[in-house]
Length: 192
Image 1: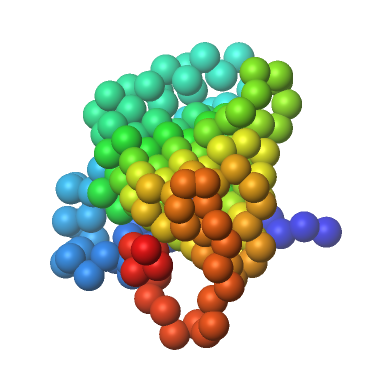
Image 2: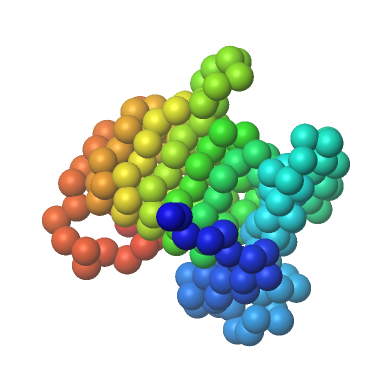
């Protein structure tokens, strides 16, 4: 049998901790809860996603909530997207996460990232990110592709093909580079 779904309150606490763990400028939980737009957008998404999943009748209100959150934070996360635990959006302005996107646990996105679709068909059209994926500022990850566990995407890269686990994608179009060790920090800008 599968794992029980975490309660919303537990997810919100873990998101707060993820922000503290990934941002050395975060001085307290209160500061993060009050001043981090990425956390605000994620919390709004968590509520909208719960509505989206609970009933087809709540899908329009879920979309309206997500649009209100977008207006407040500059971050657009479709309530139909599936986002794992301990997710962090750093300097989130301009982040877009599409309806069929799936994001694993312990992932991090920087500002200006798009997890976008490449089809108008009502099918899986957005990327899937494995666990521990980091996507650098301004990167575009497009289409129903998969970024494997521990993959990294450099700033401003355009990724339209699968990225294997523990591989870095940089450039336009993105080229793949195998990482020699785990000694790297999580800052994808260093790969450019």
